Length: 173
Image 1 (spheres, rainbow, N blue to C red):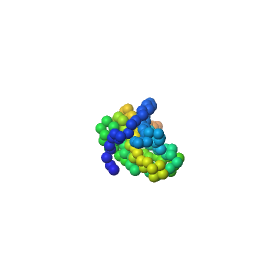
Image 2 (image 1 turned 45 degrees about the vertical axis):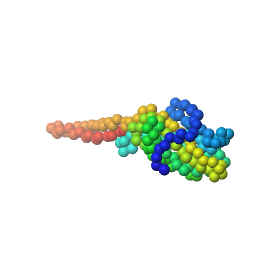
Image 3 (image 1 turned 90 degrees about the vertical axis):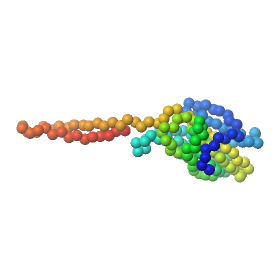
Image 4 (image 1 turned 180 degrees about the horizontal axis):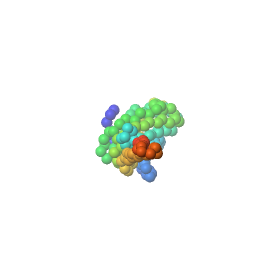
């Protein structure tokens, strides 16, 4: 599935952090059972081939004793409901008590609420559901300024000869 869609059938409990907002909920029809998955994530700016990008990393902990299969994991912006990319987790399925990780590289100009939606199923739990995790991206990534510097070395020549200068450009950034 390659569309980003809001999950309207999930109730959410909001936990606010300085960089991230995490959402979790109970599966429909099972108010006493906890979700078998917990998700954490972080986003960092980087520059690849001179272009600013947003590297987003996620970890899913399977806190259940049964294996959980990730059917789909899609990331998008909640404000526009735009699908940005799929996130693939390894290992998948996630064995009981284990952790899977996934990452995605997104354009560096993204600002807003970046939402990961995970659809899962577990035959051992005889259940399926959705998990959602949100990161707040407060500012776009920017490429560091490029600077050019030169160094000059001069030599003294015998009288009547011109001075020679060696120039070696160096690049930083």
